Amino acid sequence: MGSSHAQQLLAALLPIAEERNWQLVALLQPGCSFGIGGPDPCPQTSAAFLRYLLEVGPDVVVTMATRTEVGSADGEHAPLGFDDVVAPLLDQDIAVVGIRDTPRFETSPVDCWTRQRDSRESCTVPTSELLAPVSPAEAWDDRPGYRNLDFTDLYCPDDECPVVIGNVLVWMDHDHLTKDYASTMAAPARDRVIAAVEELSF
Image 1 (cartoon, rainbow, N blue to C red):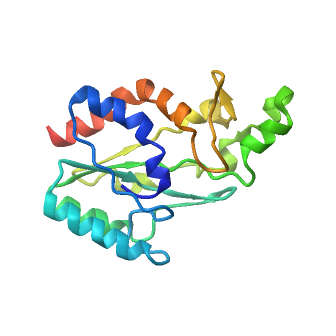
Image 2 (spheres, rainbow, N blue to C red):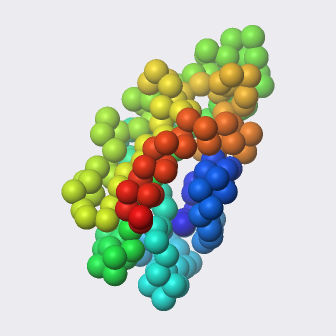
């Protein structure tokens, strides 16, 4: 549910859904976080998504619970109007799993790597320069029916965000994972995704 930052994680989530026999439906609008806020058509799209969810009544809604800003750890925040879409879902006993956003780099790590393949360390950026010390989504931790997931350790291990991990290119541009790398996240993310979803819905 949400923008291209939600879409990029489908490659990690689909294998888990297939294994567990979950039906996964993607509702996506490029450039629009799930929340009643932001520029048109984002508020209208999120409102339509919310109406659909309340009508269909899925077991769990998975969406991005924070939004990062370009090259700014201080800029990470909950999507505009996040409360306005999550609270009605929880009120109708529709569980919500919120995922922390991926970083947004000032310049594309891929461009850096293309220019400096022999020194990929120079393209690595500390996580502290890109993400808040504590995820803003943790403010929702005590809400019944809500769980947070944070995959930062899978693409920014050891508090650094490299351009290549295990000979796989991590970043497609300045703020999206490559499909190949997202696919590699399915196995290490599996247990935490299953625990969050099945604790809430079964």
